[in-house]
Structure formats: C-alpha cells, structure tokens
Amino acid sequence: QRIYAFALNGQGRTAEALQVAWRSVTEHPQVYLAHHAYARLLLSAGQPQQALTAANEALRLNPAAADNWVLRGDVYRALNWWDPAEADYREALRLQPDNAAALNNLAANRLQRGGTRGVIDGFVGAGRLDPEAAEVAHYNIGAALTKWLRLANTCVIFLFVVLSTVVYGIRTAISAYRIDRPTATEITGVPAE
Image (cartoon, rainbow, N blue to C red; front, side, top):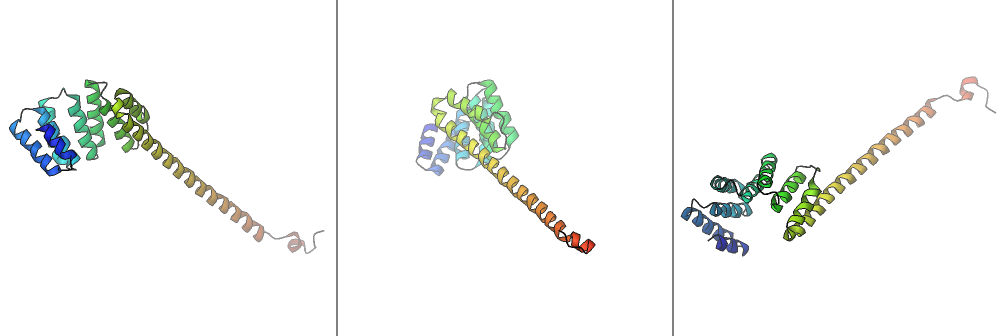
C-alpha cells in the first residue's frame, strides 16, 4: 500500500495517496514504515503538524532507523523549528554516519538559519555519499553561494552609501567653513597682493 500511495502522489493524486497511506497506518499500526510513509506524504502535502504526529509514531516504533530521524528533522524544518531539526539530523548521523539525506538536510537547515559554518562541506559530503543526490547537492551549493554573494553585495552597497554620505558631509562642512571665514581684506581692509 505504501508504494501505491507514493505512486498516486507522484501522479498528483495527493488526496487519494493520503487515503491509501492512512488505510495502511490503520491496518498496520505497529509497522513503522506505514507511519513513516504517511508522515512523508503529509509533509509533501503541506501538512507539517499532522506529519509530526505520524513521524513521532514512526520514531516511537523504531528509534534505530536513521531515516525516521531525518523525516522528523524535515518536519521540524517545515515548521521553522531549527534547533530540533538540527538535533534530529545529528541523531540520524550518529546512527548512520553515511546518511546523505541527513548530511544534506543538516547543511540546508544551517543555511536557512543564516549560518555559514559547515554548509558547503555538508552539501559536498552529501553529494559524495550518494551520487544520486549530487544534483541536489550542487543546487544547494549554488543556493548557498548566491545567498552569501547577495549579502556581500548588500554590504558593499551599504558601505558605499555610508561613505558617500560621510564624504558629502565633510565637503559640505569644508564649504561652510570657507564661506563663513572672513577674508584678509575683510579683516584688515587692505587688499591682498
């Protein structure tokens, strides 16, 4: 049923996919993969709160599965809960150090938070661990570089505006000083030679 649910979702039949996945959860409540699949479909359908419940149940049933930790980290990220997401990705990497999804998503989480430490390394590492994820890793590296270049560009423009304002202020002050200062002729009454 899980495969059928994902096939339906791939065809854009999200409502039907969710019904099939829910039926799988109700028929097999002790199978963590049923809850995992349901959570993944809920998340892709834009329902992260409901996905969190299903992801928590998958984790309760099998806390040793690194993919369950990655899934819940993804749900937390969708909810903008950065710290719990990072903790879950780290737990997934502790359980399975070569988990490309956990490494990539940990880096993406840091990038979304505005961090720079280890972001590129995380994306590169994910691409090395899973060649199928290399395209996503390259895209994410480009996104990280674009974000940082935009920030650098904004900083340069800001500095230019500040410096221009300071230079204009100095020139204005010098001009005002020259205008207000009396000339030698005004002071002595004798024209300067």
